[in-house]
Length: 434
Image (tube, rainbow, N blue to C red; front, side):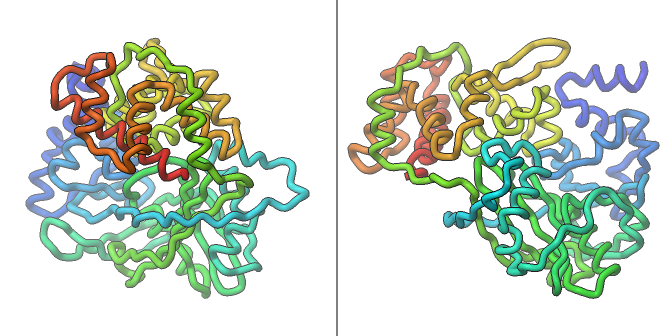
C-alpha cells in the first residue's frame, strides 16, 4: 500500500493528522523525544507522506495535528529544510482587546484605496501606512517602508521553555526562511509587522521572534515586533517586546490600540429597534441551527471567502479553525444566507450574492445588514426583544423562546442549551454595537 493510500485509509483523521500519525510511527518520534527531549526531522522525511508547506505551518495552537496536541508538542524550523519537534512553549495568547477605537482619515487625494474593500493583508498594511495609523501607533512621523518579503534568517541561538521539563532548551537556527509582511523604519526604531486578516485566540511567536532576531543583528536601532489584525473595518495593533532578546518565551505586550478609517460608526438602539420591527421573517432553513458563539468570527469567515472560494481543508489549515469549528462556522454563515456549500471533488464554500453585497457596504450599513440577517430569524428577534424589555436575558429565557419556534433538528435539552449560547453570543455582538 502506498503512503497516499495509507493516508486516505485513515478517514477519521484530517490528511495532516493522518500523515503525522504515519511519520510518528515510522520514525518513533515520541520515543526519541522522551529519550532526547526533541526530535529533528527534515523536509525530505516529511515529504514522504505530504508536502512540508502543509505539514509544518501551524500559526495557531488550534491548527496543530492531534498527536502534537495530545503530547503537548510544537514544531519550529531551524534551517531551510529542517525542523525540530519538542515540548516547546511556542504560542502566545492575544491579550484582551481594548474597546476604544481611534478614527483616522485617509489623505483627501487617495483614490486607489477603497476602505470598503480591504481584501488582503497587503492592502490593509498600505491603508494603515498612508492613513497615518502606523505613525500614530509607533509615535514616529518619520516612518518609511523598508524591508518586506521572504529572506534568510542568518544564524542565531535562542532559549525556549520546555513545558514538559520546566526548563529552557537551546535551539540553533541556521539560515531558516523568514517572511516579513512589512517593515517601517524611523529615526529611532525599525518596526517589523506580522499582518493577519483572521481572528484567533493566539499566534505562533516565531512569526515575530525570528524576524526580530534577524534584524536586531543587522541594525543598531531598536527593533519593534508588531502584530496587526484587520477585520470588519477595525485595525487591531499590538506592540510586543522580548524582555530577554535571547529568550523566545519572554514575549510581553507593550501596548494595544484599535483604529478605523471608517467615517460613520454610530449605531443607535432606535436603529436596531427599527430592524426588529421591519425585518422580514425568514423561514428556518434545513441547515444545522448555529453553534458558533462568536459572530465576529462569522463575519471574519465571510471576509476570508471574499477573495475566492475555499475548501473545508483550506479553511482549516490556513486559518484559526479546527475541522469541527470549520463545520460550525460555515454552517452558521449558510444559515444566514451569506455562504453557499458546493460539493465537487471536495466540499467548497463560496460567498453568496447577499454575502458579497453586505461586505461591499461601509462599516455602519454593513453592521446593520448583518443585524437584519440575524433578526430576520424569529428566535433571535424574540430573544432580543426580551433582552431590551427586561434589560438582560439568561439561557433559560432563550431556551424557552427556542422551544416556541420550529427549529431544524434541535431536540434534546443539551442541544437547546448549546445553541442558546450561540443566540446569546450573537445578541451580545448586536448590543456591543450600540
